[in-house]
Amino acid sequence: MACKNCNTLAQKRQLSSTGEVTRFLRRLRTFVEDGRIVEFPSFTDLADVEDDASWPDVIECSFGCPDCGQEFSFKANSHKSKPPQWLPTKTTHHRR
Ligand SMILES: [Zn+2]
Image 1 (tube, helix red, strand yellow):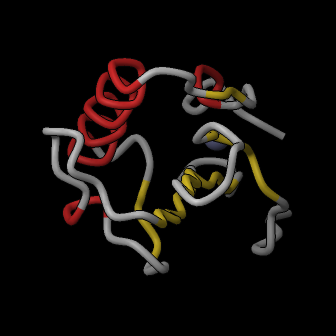
Image 2: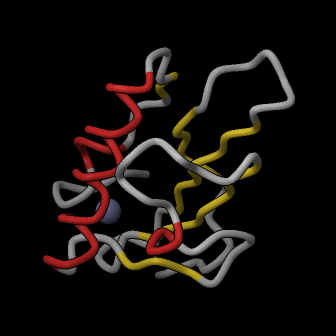
C-alpha cells in the first residue's frame, strides 16, 4: 500500500523515450536526496546511471518508501524490446 509520501510513485509506468527516462531518473535522484525514498543495494546503483543516456545495457535499481515500506524497482534492458519501466514491487518488510 502506498502512503501519502510515495503516492506519486505508486503507479506502474513505462518510459518509452530517452527523454522520459532522463527526466524520470532526475526525479528519482531528487527523491533519494530528499529522503522521500531510499535506495537499496541492487544490481545497479542509481549513481552509476549517467544523465547523458549512456546507460548500462541492463539497469535494475531498487527503492523503498521509508514511511510505509512500499518497494519499487526501475528496470531497463536494452537487449529486450520492452521499454524501461518503473513498478511498485512486493513489500518484503512488513510493518504493523
Ligand atoms: Zn509510502
